[in-house]
Image 1 (spheres, rainbow, N blue to C red):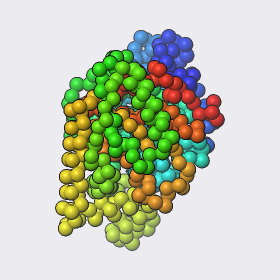
Image 2 (image 1 turned 60 degrees about the vertical axis):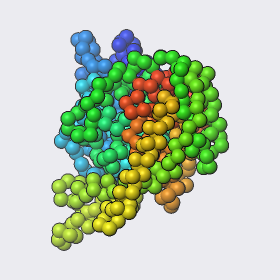
Image 3 (image 1 turned 135 degrees about the vertical axis):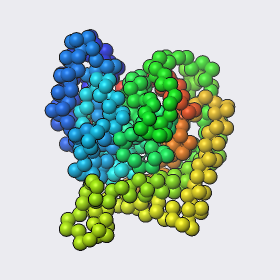
Image 4 (image 1 turned 120 degrees about the horizontal axis):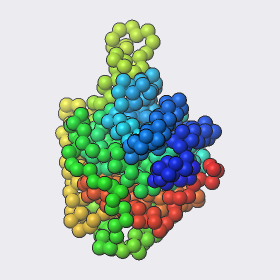
Length: 484
Ligand code: GLN
């Protein structure tokens, strides 16, 4: 059952080939057997999942149920879940049990999906390797001594290891696409504002966007159909009609122009990764698309601008964790100041503290203009690069990550080396555009991802290109050998 895609499971559930209880039990058994080694889940909600599965089966028997009725999924532990611990990968929220569901969690519940549990992640979504999680590192199912990518490493590893057919995720600078690339699965980060951030714990509010990780583009379309849509509780959520993302999957690629940015194929790109990506682009050409060389001249400024803007926003967002209202509180505080200092000092990990310090500095009087305002100006230039490119092309294609999964600790001592992991993904967030990663090959048996970037609200086009590619390739069908 676990090698079926979500779309295939949906069809089998509809044909009553198996029940949701059977499917859910099958995944819970796999999680119990395999996840002690992978560590992709922080919390498994077995009893609740079986109860939801029973409800889904009953609904089906009555001829009712939503579009994902009985399908088990996992949620990144950044989405608040009513009555279920939500840690955001941090000690700070080790005992936090939200009294409400995130908007997207409710959407999936209404659609009849079953929640298997909450997936592991870098602390407060800061990282590219999942090594900053307070709940331990996640092992890449393809290479257990390697990272799964981050910050949605748990969601990517869970889908790659077939411990869930689909998982929610978030992407602030690459956290859906880079782990999808490193784990050989499909990931989509929608346009900023396409998906409600309500109940999604904030890292950098002008960049954060929820999305999904699945085995195929067809599955991503089914998940997006439920996830996307307006929510008045998120003031940056956009009231724009949600298309049926499944409808155009098979559209022809004849007449499509794919831009290939020269800046994404320069120094620093692993030559084997480049070969796989170039071969994938040829495949898309064979499907009828034309390619065109383009330039995104401010690409090299994306990482520096991001590492001013994201820390600045995180320093403001994370000020709410003060040991007073909720979250971790230190033992025996001497006074209020001691309570703040020790609760935050003990509750946050190294990387989170580094970002809070950098962000606080960048926002302080006298430095604001030099750093934050300047970074926002650069952000505008990056957005203009994309606007210019999209006057000439329909989508942009290139690598998702510079290389396949790296070993644990390989970039641990060097924050800047880790920050460069997102060199091809971060600009998309700064410009608010949708991006996707799909498996397109492997190097030393470790997956490589192809990145597709679209115009604002053109997710359907990305899914269409990805689906057509997946119709003629089988990278997305390959499963890690050691996991059966
Ligand atoms: N790796 C980037 C960072 O550490 C992006 C993380 C993300 O997208 N949440 O900030």
